[in-house]
Image (cartoon, rainbow, N blue to C red; front, side, top):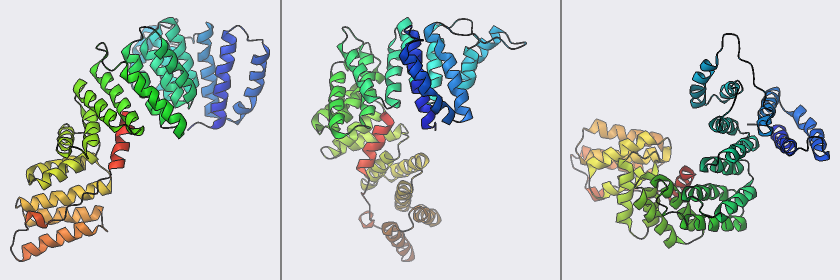
Length: 405
């Protein structure tokens, strides 16, 4: 994590380069900025100072005063170009930037990559400069979206909102840009107080309502925007509108996140439909662990024990949380008992469940029921098992919001 001194120097550095670009490098404000920069620079670590020096050098590109670094002995331009894609894809940002500095000229994609590299290192203000600069040269939605996203990462929510309003006010703005702006603002809203948050969420819904049916946008982008609107409506207390957004998201792009969002929205009004959505997401191997709880519990209640085993096994592969793993192991043990699996397998599953949740009384009672039935050579009736239903719905919503962010 960068120090506050490093962050402060970056902000001042960006302001200085903007003054220089405007032809005011000898002006009063530029001189004042230089004076303010001394203290945070000296307070930064040596590694941070080296990065800040590199950022300062790179920012000269926006003024048209870029210095090209000479090739090393034996190095060729062809070898530099060959190394660049691999370095960027490996997220070796410092190497990528070193290679870019050796190119005699930079095309728009090169400047964008430069912004991405500084963005990934947490220098958001510097990254915004590169995104804005490349967008001036060759306007593209991705450059504007990247700048908006970096503003949110920098904590400049008001500036992000201002940019979003500017985008919305343009004539013939692309649907994809509006949808992506809405998704970013929804993420930004999570950092705001109640009053500001409500206004931002209302803007999110407005942006999406005006763009979700744009056929030129990819289905996945339309669904992401609709999810953002759905979460916004949920937070605004407008549950019917939230469900409508989630329904639309499933319609335009039937995939994991829309299915799970619709399932949660339907949980208390149409549980059978909600379970179908959860089961479909589970069968597609969702990375979230809580849908496996819903799917396994539903199958257990319906007596579909082979399904229970599969859902529990897949859920265990997806989860590291003891509260989830313990319950899935318990339900797997019950399903194994009902299917007549060997006692040592069933007992092993109960033991593993108790290892995950050693103080859970329900698991212990179910294990004791099974062992008593074995002792008396009786089968345990399906309705004799205790089945917990304490799935954390609030946590499920939160995890889905975080995934969508």
